[in-house]
Image (cartoon, rainbow, N blue to C red):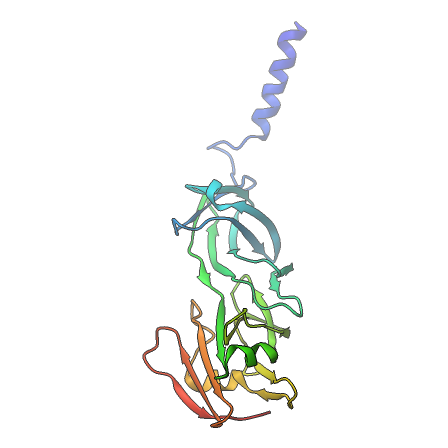
Length: 260
């Protein structure tokens, strides 16, 4: 009899804990299905689920998450974000922060609200560019530029993953031109103010600090756009002029050079 009784008891226990159509399904999870809309997206992505506090933070291989990535979550409205392309940045709560001394990562991210009150919930992730690459030209040859030191500073040091807003904090990096090139490039995150500045220290000369954030703001550039565009800055020290333009914009603007 025991060999019949034990399986029967186990079946009754399983039936008592399973979700059925007739009973209240509140305690049962919602199955969240996340898909990545860009067919060329690859590598590792981080997904963050939040409701008053963190529900989960998972890393997934995008190639292995086709057609979708599925996770059971408690039922209710859910804040969801996904990001990829981070290297130096580190997670702190709901924020992705850039360590001092590093430029911004090539971070692409998405954030949205998901209705996970039912048995199934769906989210389609479309990654958007969360950094701007600045191309800085001081109108000197490669040897002179190579001998200069460059310092970039600002008051935005990362991104809030739940709403993709800038995170307040000290940003500092010292970009160097590549061998044989006269253009200095560096990546910056979304900005919350005009504090972004660049200091140029020519060899054997006095350093000069320029309000890069103010120039960019006067151009009409918005740090709140869904996808950030790259910025081209030419500083003509001899003529006392700075030219600022944005990728894909037909025209730029020239301003008198201001030192801070």
